[in-house]
Length: 415
Image (tube, rainbow, N blue to C red; front, side, top):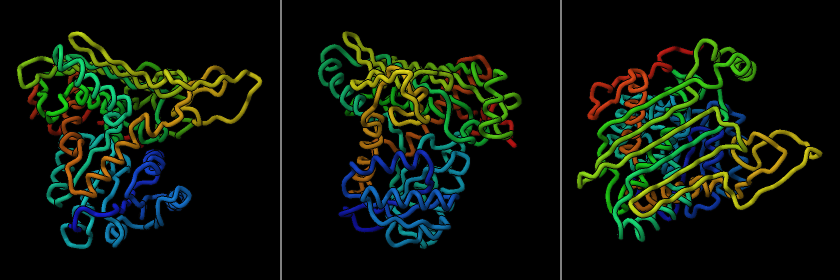
């Protein structure tokens, strides 16, 4: 491992798609970092990525044609793992091999949510990271949302200290559907909306319920109950739309994944107090765009946040026309009418503070707030929720029997 602390952290991106670009653009507000490398399967996308790095003044980025070559580069200290879910374990095995066999000096890794598709895969991700002696961070941006950071600090300092800990966290995330075909394919993504989005909701809720001076594991999961449903995208006209948009590999007439999920998680703190997480997620929400809604309730207080209740709003009449885009809010569904505008999406959604935190922890050799251990804990909750939805029964912890459990929608191979 390189001597720490390092004056600047040199980062290589594994993946150059939508989420990689989101992370990249947030880096303009992160100090002490240079983006020096990128590897992905699409050479044109990687070259475009390098151009964005240059335009943003984030360093001289080189596109590599193999992961091994990027990992061996002298100017890569840490990697951001942002590839599709079904590729994560193989990528991690390559990283582990290159480091343990002495061909790479990479000493830190940050991995996008969810950590893996199953509990077994998540445990392997954690084992490989630890065996390679990597400092590891789990990229759960909602934990770092600016309203979450500020809201939690106020609630615990002013309200919980006076009247008792919060006992109920509600978290919801909804939009009209993912960007890329693999998200819709249960076997590749690991499930449907429950896997894709409830990973956010359960972790930000768990974070809000955790006392600031305590570790996340201070809250023990006792039991979970989950429900999944197919509300919109199995309807003939919408399933036809998916085939037209993505081709026969996304056929919701034959191989649908759930587009709605609900989960209740019962936990217990160190003093024996029960606390509850209520989470809902949907790919069937049609509004201005992506909606994140959070609530935290305690004995004499409450907190709430809705990402679409923005201070800035724009109105455009029907006389204003233009191309479809996402220039006002992520997953934007309209270009006319009264529209909320997130003037700093990367900041509000948490990407800026998340990446600033990871860079500083890696640069200084400190343990991040979110690690692969937390990623594993999230996958355990998700798989228990899927098992509950399948059986119609509450699943009690511990859940050793679910180590190799695969959600129903992930058991059907896509074409």
